[in-house]
Length: 319
Image (cartoon, rainbow, N blue to C red):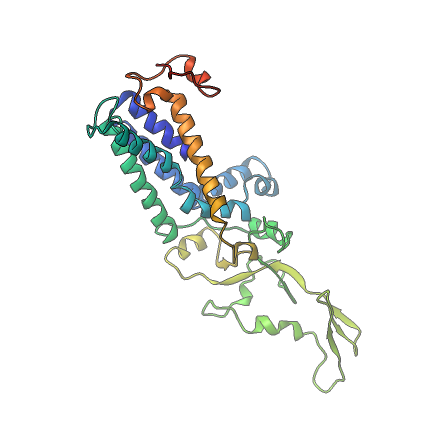
């Protein structure tokens, strides 16, 4: 995102114009597709056509890390604007020029100023759509359930919580028999583990072992629970019908690793902001020249001097 912002901003600095509007609209559409999971969903469908399902899931399947990365964009997406705004404010303080055009103008030209304003508005627009789910999140399929069923709750990459259940129905990955007619979880689901115990009047002893094995002393019968993904009730939100049409009839319970995350110390957050800001400012200096950014040059830097600027800067700054 920082690269796209820098490329758009530097292009407008160099040539002006309003061609960036269509590019920015396409960028918003691509960002929304990625953040809502539809880009990954389409890659999965394409991967299933080109190779088998398990290989496609291994390549493109979502994990706890990818979900965390998508959520992080709500906050980190704003960091790319820090160096751009700081640069404009520094130019305004240094030169005291309130013009919208010229080498010493705070935002270089009017079109570049509108790039900053419009892209910040687009970022806010994206966040509202994602957080309030104004557009649908991509559906999950049986392949995702199978991939997560082989994981572990302690694994940070685990996306769906795992649980141990008795008498798991075979052949139905979504276990629709767990639901009542209203779509809520049935109470029978929590008591199904006693279905195979001896009938009333028979002496019995039930003990729970650390391995979650239930032993019936009178019958020497042992029931071992099966590890399955944790599924919720039937979805009832505005986009549930669309996901059901794509094959997801129930909600998913996210893994424990995505709950109770602690806030990073402020120093670490500031370090991350600094890294993103330096990346954005360094790329901008590569494209237009460090001297032009700081108003010491009337024209943008061209030629191999821009590449050398990644390694060292001559003083005075070359123009």
